Image (tube, rainbow, N blue to C red; front, side, top):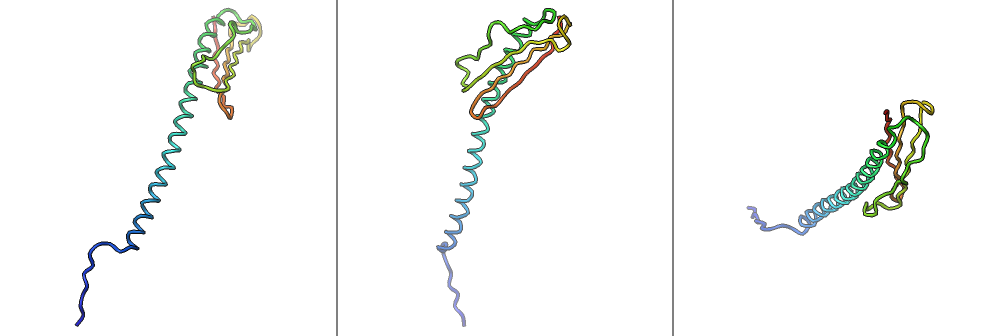
Length: 128
C-alpha cells in the first residue's frame, strides 16, 4: 500500500521561478516607462519649437503682405528666453519666388534647437 504525502505551501524552486518571471515583467515595464518619458520630452520640445516658428511666421507674413521685394526681416527674429529650448537658431527669410514685383511673397521660418540639433521649418506664400 502506498502512502500519499500532502504538500502544503510552495517549494523553493517554484518561488524562484515566480520571482524570476516577476523581475522580468518589472524590468520590461521600467524600459517601457523610460521610453515613454523620453519621447514625451522630445514631443514637448518639438511642440514648443513649432509654436515659436509659427508665431514668427504669422508675424513676418503680415509684414510681407506688400508687393514682393527681397527684404531682410525686421525686427530681428528672436526666441523667447523662457522657451525652455537650448541651442536655438531662428532664421526668417522673405523672398520673391517669381521675381521682384510679383504679387507673391514667400516667408520661410527655420528654427534649429537642441543637442543633437533638430529643425522645424514653416513656410507660407503671401499675396497682398
